Image (cartoon, rainbow over all chains, first blue to last red; front, side, top):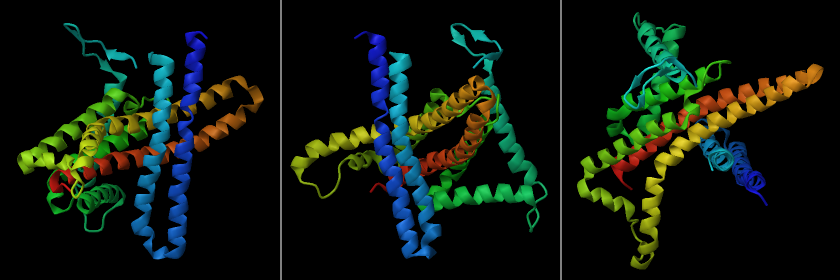
Length: 75
Length: 231
């Protein structure tokens, strides 16, 4: 296998990071919905943390993207 | 990125690029917003004064609830950081402009400033006692052999995650927009579908732009809180 195709496979494998990001984002909003269904009055306190959690979980998937770019264009 | 005013000093390329132009525009806009809108401050704020006051109160509230009263000394820094990233992100969404925060050197410079500043604040406030930060309490001595290196590593990885998070979010958003715009260029009459997707993605990017500025600012607050109050 030559280097170019190995790079392509590696960049594709880096997309597996999206599994974790998807589970994480789903978890964040599932918990938000269930906690708001129990106590709607807590929305103001809970929502900022939910969005913080969403951004942090999404960023882990983007680290995978950063690795894919590193593999494709840097090395 | 291209040079607008080429300038070379020795082996350094100090050209005024379009990235620098966008940063200048962001700084001018923030200064104009905060100065002009509060020049004739009224008790009942108008539209512009409301924007300035709301952003001020939003960040002030964030600093106070995350760092506490002592943290308000660092409020101007956090506010500047938040507004600069917010405006840089939003300006980058305008077609044909340039996303400054999509450059890792820009985000890493900001993250490095936060990291070194926070570390210095920690050492100034606690002296060498700040090193206790890396030693979790109530842990058996044997486990410390493993835990201390992990704590040290997770501390030193902070500026990198902070920088890459913002940079990768901006870059990924613009890449997605670019890919769908590329589909639109080759599809002819069916180009309406990728363009529609681009419109929706732009709405998502608007959310991400605000959210990432918020995340950067709140994480800086949390790191500052660690340095001021230890754990």
